[in-house]
Length: 137
Image (cartoon, rainbow, N blue to C red; front, side):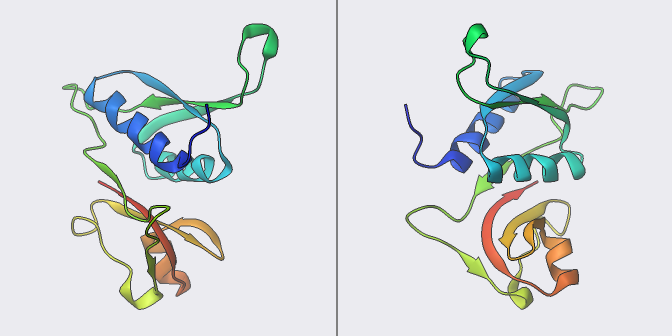
């Protein structure tokens, strides 16, 4: 089964796993999804991730990413929300002077720029805009 929007699929799986209080979640691999996961790890929204290579003998037919989700000591999820902004039917682009701040900079906006997939703070420092992929808080 093919997925028409792998980014939205990955974000939905992460959101649902946090709502169900899972410790980990496995999502399909895509290069841009891997870049987003690296940013989530760098911003401490997840504990870590591992790439699972394709292994036909173990019935793993495509490359996957396993995320270890992060919670507080009281069991409250660190990641409160994750929302897709730019969609295949409606792309959203921002320039460097109009990069949004997410919840007064407690969250982050993830942008796909000519410098790669970066968070809003880095894009402001580099004075570069791009496609506004999603926001995380």
